[in-house]
Each structure stands twice: as C-alpha cells, then as structure tokens.
Image 1 (cartoon, rainbow, N blue to C red):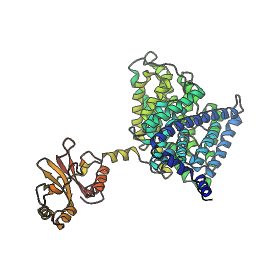
Image 2: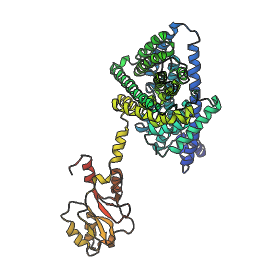
Image 3: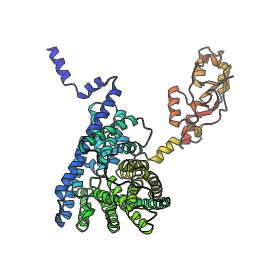
Image 4: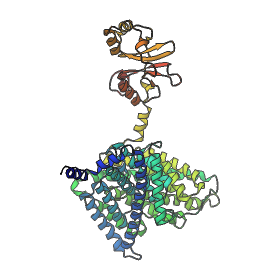
Length: 576
C-alpha cells in the first residue's frame, strides 16, 4: 500500500517540478536546445500566419469583386475583431512590439497563451479583411509568446524566461521578413535595447533556425523582387539627403497623428472600446471603394514602385491615403503592426522623389525604383527608430551592396529630423499610453553615465599601516566617516571600519598594528569608471559605507574615496 501511495504521488507530481529536477546542472544545454525548438516552432507559426492571411484575403477579395465588398468587409471585420479583442483578448490589440517589451521589462517574461492565440487569429482576420496594418509586429509578440510559454512549461528561472523574449522575437522577424541578420539586430536594438546583450548567441541561433524553416517550406523568395541598382552620379547623394529630410518629416507627421488619435480613442468611455475599431474599418472601406489599391498592407504595390511600374500620381495618392488610414486603423484598436505600413509609406515617398529627380536630371539621377528602395529604409528608421536594423534589412532584401551608402545617408537624416519633431520613440509612447513605463534609451544612457568619478571625494583622512589600533581609534574619533583607507609604503593596502577598530581594541588588541589585522590580498575597492550600482554592490558585500577609489593601472594608487552619502547626494536624495 505504501509503495502504491508513493508511486501515485510521483505520477501526480507537477510537471514543472519534474523538469526542474531534469535540468538540475544542465540549464545551459537545455537553454541551447530550447533555442533551436523556439526557432523551429516560431518559423512554422509565422509561415502559417503568412499563408492564412494571404489565402483568407484572396477569398474575401476575389478578382473583379464588387465595390460594395470593399466597404462592407473591412467594416464587418473590424467590428467582429474589435468585440473579440475587447471580450477575450485585451492584450492582443495593436502592434505587439510594445507588449513584447512590456513582457521583458515589466512582466517577468510572461505572455499568456490566450494572448498568443488571440494575436494570431485576430490579426489574421483583421489583415485579411483589408485593414492596412502589418503582420511583422504581431509576429514578434506571437514568437515571444511561444518562447515564454515553452520557458514556463520547463520551469525556467525568471531571468532565463526574460532571456527567451528576444529569442522568440528574432525568430519571428527572420521568418516574417526573410531577413535573419536584420532580425538579430532588431531584437537587440529595439526589443532589448543593448547590442552587447549576453543573449546574442541564442538570438542568432533562433533566427537562423526560423529562417531555415521558412526556406524549407516557402522556398528562397525575398520579400520583394527588385533589380540591381547603382549610383549614377555622386550628385545623387544630395538628393538622397533631401529624401532623408522628407522621410523624417513624413515619419514625424505619421507618428504624431497616430499617437494623438490613439490618445483620443483611449480617453473615450470604456464601454465604447469594443466598437472603436470600426472607425478604422469604415474609413478603410470608404477609401478602398474609391481607390482599391489602398486596401491591405499593399506589398504588391510596393513591389511595383520598386520596379518603376507605378505612376507618380498614384504614389502620391497612396502616400496620403495610407498615412491617414493606417493611423486611424491602429489608433482605433485594430490588431496589426506598423512595420509593413512604414515600408509602404517610404516606398511611395521615395518613388515620388526619384520620379521628380529623374524627370529633371535624367542623366544624373537613377530610376525611381532606387529611391523607392532607399525610401523604405528611410521611413522605417524615422518611424520605428531602428536605423541600423533598417540598413541591414534593406541590404538583405536587395542583396546589393551599392545601396548601402545612399541608405545610410538618408536613414541618418530621417532619424535626426524625426527625433527633432517627435522626441519619444513611437513604441515607448504607445506603452506609456497603456500605463506601462519602459526604460528608454535616454534613461539607459543617463544610468550608464553615473559613475564613481562623479561621486568620489578626496581621501582627506587615511591611516598608516604601522599605526596601532589604539592610536587609530583616537585619531578617527572626531571623523565623520565610518571607514578609512589603510596605506603603507606601497600605497593603499586595505580599508578598515570604525566598528572593526573599536571591537579589536575592546578585545585587548589595542597595541597591534593595523597591518596585522588587515586581511592580505585584494581589498574592497572601486575604480573611477565603475557605475554607482557596482559601488553600492561592493559596499554591501564588504559591509562598509566607504570604499577607496583606486587606479586601474595600479590598485595601490589611491585616487579618493566614495561614500554611501556621496552616492545618494548625486541622486539628490541627501545634501552633500
């Protein structure tokens, strides 16, 4: 009977406990295998996402369809999905990138199964119904959600769970865009915010695995088929810079319009939340009734612009219509991202710029397709604020090195202009509107700039290593410090606290020299370029409120001291 009870208890043991025992001492190996699994699974799901969206959309909008369908389907689709998002999947609204960053920074790497399912199906139906949003941002949240789910099933630690978020995000972008290198850079540049993140190896592995699954199932087909372009004249660099200015202005206008509209929608009564997406669906439908090319994300028309097969008037019209319809569709709460729309806007803007330039200077300016290509990266850099990802992504799409320098020039100008007119990046503001405060680049930079050098002071009081404990006690009695560096002929050799001096004196060791009670070897210290976090950590580990600041070239060379009060004063908590 006892054996039966024990066996039954083992069978009922939680799976998480079983996995924890299995991973004991093997977490690195399990994490590596899990990275491969995440890459493969996310690749399969993104392929399904692509096929479902395209085939569902083809059924809803067959060739030669009636004009009324272009009004009715987006309206009904946004209404139905709006109710589902409000009732069952509240975290599946919008792009998915801000929610992914929120999972990383505010939710211990947790994304629920319900959110993953809702994001997949609601976004598929929304995009198939003609709403002009993108699938790449939602793919990021789905990929990160799959990684989070697998991590929870295996009972990984919170830190490991958080490490899986960029792994799933990179796998999703690699399959969605067919750009594995840009996927790695985006996961580090935008999701993590640190190009030197320790998860780099896992992100690369997951991205490559997901991309391999895409190639296996759908073949080696780039997102856009484009001809090879070349620089006709060095004078074109000036026109690419002008394109950067225009791209920055369009990016800032789009971002401010979207954020302003979303703020107004969020301020409406909560009971209206479920049918707010209809505002976007109805507007898209009315635009589609007049201009059918404005429906959907429009990658087909981006391809036409890249190959120079679109007239300037249609490009100008689609630029205006898409800018407005995407902003309203997203702001009203439809599920979908802004990756694809930003590429569309950039292609139309670049195509216009190239058409105008080629018309006036045909012998010195390349065809409009080259400018449409650079314009894609220009708008992406200005809206998403990921300029390095933009350069690498366009390079992977074209596989043409000749486009790199014009792209870098235009991206840099666009990024600068957009940043001047819209200070905060779009994803950070979107998260803030939802009550989530993500760490921005400025705060990370400010944190990294707070070094010991800014808080240290001169070491006015030091103790000689040959001083007796009794004399040291008398010498330090009037000092406001709680610890002092101990120096010998070599320089600083240790640090001793008031408590240690008084305790040794009470124990009858008053005639001992300080060098006799200072532990040999390395002593607690910091360097001037250490962060204040490091200084506080070392103070806590040593049980001291004062640490000597020493040179990196010579650990015995005393540069000054830093105290807890000095650190707090730098943050404005205490007067210095």
